[in-house]
Length: 155
Picture 1 (cartoon, helix red, strand yellow):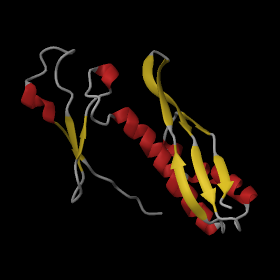
Picture 2 (tube, rainbow, N blue to C red; picture 1 turned 45 degrees about the vertical axis):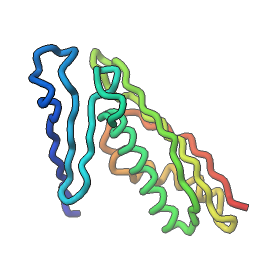
Picture 3 (cartoon, helix red, strand yellow; picture 1 turned 180 degrees about the vertical axis):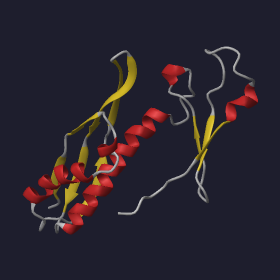
């Protein structure tokens, strides 16, 4: 199997507000750029003196796990003959002290999946676990990933 590489540039834009003199007050403003695509303005989480109006790394971590699970589920559903009509995940991540370090210890995924009436509900449910096993991001982290799906057939 080939090796794939993914690139971004992370730049501390908060320097415009001044250097890092005080650990409580320096600007956490950051910009992430991806070649040929829109940049993403970020900050640290508000709990760590970040800007509440900007996305933070912890949210991106949860989004990465959630979106990988979703995209993998859609793929295995298409291969398994399950017609997905809608997918929304209300995901949540937990940052806590573990073994003396702050860590993202758990991600809870709550996908709400709507399938076509002719799709097999039992197969659709089984594919949740298959997607989790195949998810690249979930396979790359040590955080616990809990999946609490709700699957319904459209009538």
